[in-house]
Image (cartoon, rainbow, N blue to C red; front, side, top):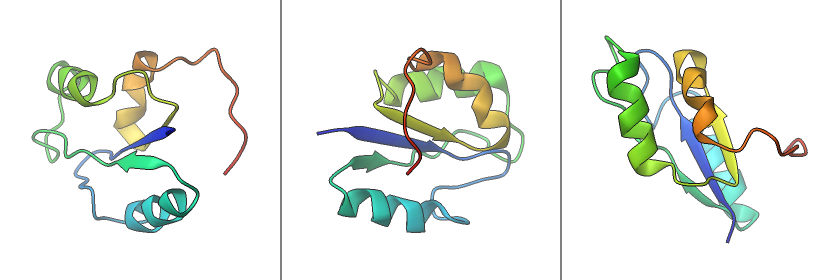
Length: 85
């Protein structure tokens, strides 16, 4: 099963904005979707977020990030090209 990790941004949380909608749509297409809560989201620090994401995101098939969370993208294989969903 293909996995997708949706990573929230600054002051974010898993049930905000378009995350629940996207999670539902991706699950309808057979993806396993995780939307982890990152620590201290109202005062994010890369030294806390990278380990938290690395603990959850292990070899993702897709990674969708928002705002500051995009800084953790080297954790995924960015050499692959993925079609738009």
